[in-house]
Structure formats: C-alpha cells, structure tokens
Image (cartoon, rainbow, N blue to C red):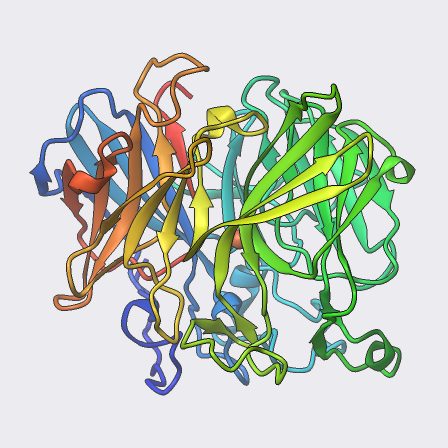
Length: 479
Ligand SMILES: [Fe+2]
C-alpha cells in the first residue's frame, strides 16, 4: 500500500526527522549486509511504532499515531524487511473516511465520538505468546493478532473478563504463562490476569486502588506479579470537576503491589517506597535472605522528577527529553521487598539515564545477570546514543556509543538458535534499529551481547527509513 503523505509540521519535535511517519508498505529481500550475520541467528525482529496515516485532528502527541510494524526476518545469513500498518478498527474507519476521526491524548477527550473518546491504535507493544503475535496499546486496548511472516492483521484476541489489555504483558518462558494487566479511569481502576500457555485466560481479578492511576508496565517473579500505585496521577480534586491534570505528589509514597501469580485482588501486599514514576521495569525475581526471609527484587528505570514543568524539580537538572508533560530522566534502580518484614530497601545503581531496557526473556522472573538499555542523551526528544550493558550482579557496566549522528532504538536479546532455556543471558545477540541522521537511512544492528562494546558484528541496510518507535520482540525461527 502507498498512502498519500500529508504535510508534516516541522515545528513539532515528534513529527520531524526520524520521528516523521512513512507512507509506503513494502517487502524487500536480499538486503545489503555489512559484516557477517551469525549462522545461529534465525528468526524475526519486530518493532511496533506510532505512524500517523492522516494529519492529526488538533494537537499531536507522539503516542497518537497509528500502529505500524517493521520486521526483519533473518535466516541463513540473509535478511528480509517488511512493514505494515496494523489494521485496527480505528485505522479501517479512518481509511474509509479519508481523515482522522479522533483527537489525540493532549486534547480534551471527545466523549461524543460514537466510536469512543480515544483511538485504540495498538501502536505500543508487540509480544509473541501461545503461537500468536499480539500488538498492544499503552492506554489499554484490544490485542490485535498479527500473522507471520506477512504482518497481516487477523482480528482481535478476545478474553472474556479482560476485553482490553495494557501494553507490557509478561511471558514466563518456563511455564508458558503470560501475565496481563489493564487500567482505566473508572472503577475497577486496575485489573490483572493470567493467560495459559495455550492462550486461554485462566485467571483474572480486580485490584483495589484509591483512585485511577497512570500505569505503564508490570513485572513477574516465579510466584508473584508486581503492579504499581505510583505518585504521578490525575489530581483527584480536579478529577471530581471533570478536569484531567496530572500531578506528581512528592509527599505521597509510591507503592509496589505484590500478588501471588494466581492470587485474588485482596491478596495484594503493598510496599511503600519513595515517590517515583517509572515507564519500564527490567526484571524481578525472588531471593532468600541470610535470615531465611523471602525477598522480591525489582530492577527498573526510575524517574525521580517526572513532570517537565514541576517548579519543585531541582534547578541543577539539565536538558532531558520530554514526551508531552513527562520528563524522561530514568536511572537504573533496585527495590528489595522483604515479604516477611514488609520493609523496602532502595538503591539507585547508576546515574546514567537509560530507558527501553530489556534482558534475555528466557530469564524473565528469575535472577538474571544482565540488563541492556538505550542510553539517553541530552536532547529534547527521546532517542538513544548508545547501548549500556549492566551486570546486575557485580554492578559493572560496559557500553557501546553509536558513531556521531547515529541513534538507536529499543534493544532485544536474541538467543542463539537451538540454545537451551537456561543459556547464559549474554550468550546471544542484541538487535536494534539504527538511525543515520546524516543520510536519513535505517539499519538493523546486530551485536554480540558478550562483546557489546566492540560494536555491531553486522549491520543490515534497510530499504526505507524506519521511524523512531517503541517496543520490540524477537520471534525465534522454531516458533
Ligand atoms: Fe512501554
């Protein structure tokens, strides 16, 4: 498909340069490869992104665009690229109308819109589970089913009891279960569920919160799931008057909720900690302390001062990216929750700003050793100028900085083809889309996870620019 480009306002930081959308859906094989693709790298790397087909109706926010998938299939040292818009109900309705039918999230919601106040674009996350590739939306929407390798949209995944699901479900690769959550501005504010290895919703429950909360991610251990009640929220007093102003309550503790994997909402144990906001967790696991207590450890990208225009932010803070009113200054942080005493220990592990962190998904929910993150430079938009590998055991870090004028995206760990479930979590490859600002061209970078600082072992030149996007998944060829 070739869609008609619309005039992009260059004044909007998230509509110019690498953030500007592409309008062609293409397939291309026999891509030019620099270096050598490892013979044991077999599968498909996929990224979801915001790619508005039509000019926005009112103010634009980067999160408003239609979902578009970009995929690179790798096998036998060769690569094939394909991109497709996700044919959501909203995309089809706007395509038929030939124009945008929804306002974005920075406009006042239009509750008179017969199709609903928000456009469910499925543009945020992508996850492979129980033989299906699913795309998910950050505000909680219908999961869309995508076929491989053609990236065709095959309707929605409906789970009675949880008709909508947030981005960032968590797949336990050992049991095959997927843990999901959803949040809404009306009660129940938070819902949680478990999808079996065969794709059936086998458990769901509502979780009581004092009011609506801004969620984004969750975490799992072998026996528990972790959910959040953070200090960034709609002002409850203004909300009663129908106004949605986000405030950061510095005097209100944030809480981490721990629920048994198949537990009821009233079984959540809440742990109070210093106020924060966090987009993305990295991993969580259980440990046994020397006194025999079980502790849950969570590592993630904690933001100390999450509001861009907050007069209480320290004056010494320099330029950091913002997305709308949110300030992206996340640091690697560890929370240790003692299930016996109810106490929390916290520690910031590194002062480097990092985001879109990932790890070897085979170790999700268990004590992994490494986290792989995008390094956030001092720009006004969220981009990454390198990859940081944190050794979560020793505290050591290594990093690779992209050449001047280059940026990258979320990294994904790809295990070697046929490697065991408990393979070392740096015995594999790190994949990320790379952006060359000088030529406005895109590449897929393939790095050895063990020798990350040596730079890519191979780069694949892509036939069109891949706009800066969100979340990624690696689907091994054997799936
Ligand atoms: Fe996210």
